Image (cartoon, rainbow, N blue to C red):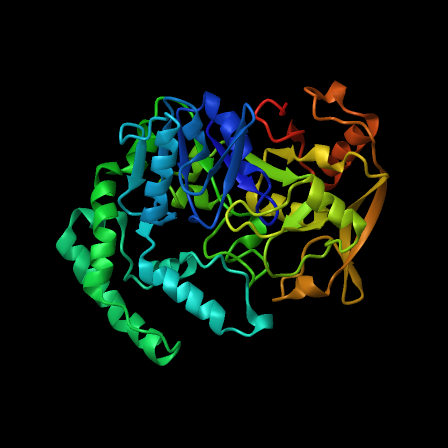
Length: 421
């Protein structure tokens, strides 16, 4: 089995966790390379649901090494909560199979508070829909070279000094910009100390673990391509690079180690929070997709916006990430719709374009150009091969291949692990 990168090709929530869970069976190690607990991966095995926010989805497979790379921002409280929940299910969550890179930046209590204060201070039309979990402020400190890294938890004197240095600036903002009470250095240190001590045994050299893995490594991202800080619908984006190239820099390996690249594509399109969404449906079809697809965020519980599959967005993802194949998820949700629409181009400033406009908020001013295809009524949740799919479902998948230029390699027809071929 070759090393595999799994990435989201839309705005996240494509079903990456399920595909990683499936592929993890043949992998030696699974590494998370970006994002934080603003992502949620929902897995269903034998009818039992498991939602993960930080620990790689391969944890449900005994014996697989689960790694958290340097490109992740780690909330230590959430990580410990996940350890406890998984441990209560009888899973091995010891340091024998879990490792956090010493270079991974840590989300501190003041990051979460700053995130919430900023969003609350914005006007309604200025909000970007952040989860308020401190992701952005933590990445800011990383780029400002004043962040706290997981390795600092092993040096408590250094940890306290860095907390004090961080709050010297942040307390000015809390008091004089947001009208909030300052945070006390000792209080923050005391709050973090128990989880800091608990995480120390999990610290290690993730780069070496990837290099020394006796078998294939599976690289797991979070969010989706069009939430990428550089290539997404800025400013309605996340705070990290979600594209495949970051799998190498976010975990500590060579790009040449990335051999098989799988784009996860929901059979329609969804988005959580604010930002342009060209194919969004505000009618009965949109409500149908939302209801049948159970489209609520695994992290926030927020209702997801739903629309037709946007192949302009998918083509952009293909050229940014270089996928070797597509994994189509939630195809079963489309059953029962008489007609399906595919967005194959945009009208923008009097011209038809094949890729998203590059200007800020350009996506808010495009008009989708649709192709209409016949739907199907059959229940496909028991399908286990292409031959089990209705003719119109196969035609739909083939048209996705034609427009995107990438072959479909995996199809998912339900939430459970077995409903994939």
